[in-house]
Image: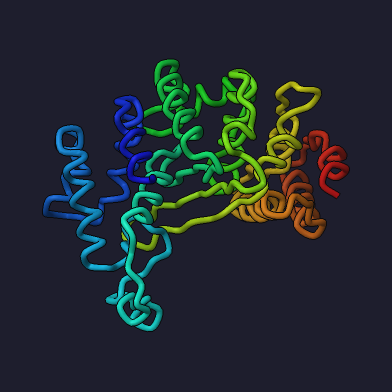
Length: 309
């Protein structure tokens, strides 16, 4: 199933063009040999299926999970005490497992080293939607094959004066908003695309020279409906509230990003507001404003509190 979904998706040239940078990041550990070709555009285009088939078959024959495509997996040379010995466990890695991860990472929306996607309960529908979406996005410059997200066009499309993509959960927030607006404009029902209580959002952080990380987000269907829609219209209120909480003063910026990131992660994971985290964010912002000797109001903070209390 996943092998078919993967190759059907990448028959679309727009999808392949957009995802090249993701493959380039994912296979950057191969400094030589055949799989390095997946990081070279001409070879990637001409030998794509042959290279992927060989890569998958080698992983199956070796019976090892590959850290190239399965985030958080460690090799035995890196961590012998934590390495999963498949032979000892009498477990045979399946081709489908590898294609599952390859598809969900390489078909996602990326920004720098972050890739976001949704594990849908209706993968065929979601794959079809992603293909059409990538074609349209590339055509109108909403998404960019080099940078993943064209930040200026992205900001204009969402109707915002400012967006911040420096931290992982803000990337998730804005990509979910992006999807939410597209769903509304294209009359796509979340449930029809398999975005329901069984679906899961995933954010993969590709870390050059180190372990790739992955974060899971459940109930994103409820989050989308609760945050981005009001009276069947797309709303930017929540994003503007979060932006108003961020402190950009150089003396407070790093700490502010950390606090806002934690606040958002809790909201995304539990659909509830953590009062202690919110207090830290607001207190830091007030101290920053005192330092700058100016006043900047919080945007509709009362609505955030009432919605997630």
